Every structure is written in C-alpha cells, then in structure tokens.
Amino acid sequence: MTPDDKVPAWPSLNDESPKVFTALKRFLEPDQLASLAADYQECVALGGNVEPGMTREDGVSFNPRLARILSIMIHDGGVKDFELLRSALYAACDNSAVSGSTLVRGVIALDSIRHLHQTDFSEPKRQEILLGVESTLLGQLRNEMPEWLRKKLEHAIALQRRV
Image 1 (spheres, rainbow, N blue to C red):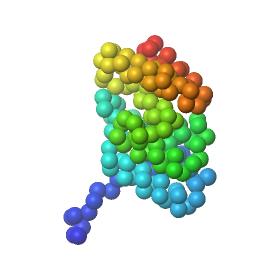
Image 2: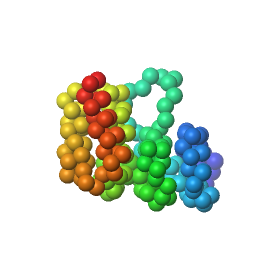
Image 3: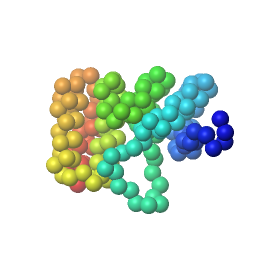
Image 4: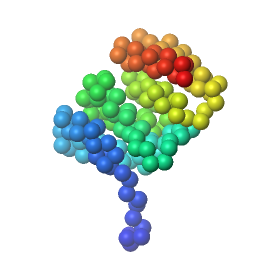
C-alpha cells in the first residue's frame, strides 16, 4: 500500500470529546478503553455521527452524536459495562437500534429527541417521531425502561412539544 492509498484518519474519541474519554478512562481497563476508542472510530466511519436533517451553524462547536450517546450512558445512566457501551456505539450506527436493548434504544431516542428542534424536519415529521417513541419505548416497552431514562424521555418529549 502506498501513502496515497491510506484509509482516511477518522477523528478519535479523545479529540472529539475529551470529557467523555476522561470519564471512560476512570473505570475501563486500558485495553477496554483502547478497544472502545477503536470501536468509536469504526462507528464514525460507518456513519454513526451522521444526523439526518440536522442543521448547525458554521463554527459552532458541538459534541458528536456517538460521544453524546456514550455520555448519556455514563453520566445519566451510570453505565460502566464495556460491552453495553460498545453495543450502544454499534446500535447507533444503523440509526434504528432495533438490535439494541431497551436501554440502548432509549438512550439513542433521548439524544435524538433532545436535538429534534435543530433539524429541518417538518412539524408533522417531528410529531411522528415523538409519537413513535411514546408508543414503543414509553408504551410497549415501558416496563423494561429504567425509571431515570423514562423520566428523561418524557421530559424531552414535553420540551419538544413546546418548541
């Protein structure tokens, strides 16, 4: 392979979100941290940070989607399980998280709802997204949802309805 054939260098978790990286460093073993950082880069390459419909002002800094999902898992949910954090990254790559646990699906939905007002989606589309979360995660899967996450989802939905 020549230097021109190099795979593009994807941003690292430490570069994009040093606070999340530092939080992970506090409880993961060094090999787990290195593995999760590599998984993060792979998930970036797979489109995990792509946010359809998202509009952002040029020059405004923000945490990438995958880092936000890890942050919710760690800081809000107290999740320290390496495999669960890893599964959240990969579930976020397909944007549906159908294969994720209710916790992972809920965290991904929470992040999406919190940023829904920053999209160019029509009002009917936004309402459709909110109703979908209410009927599945807060409806059918309510008993599988951790209480902290259920409350945060309900609050985020209420805030989005006011926007």
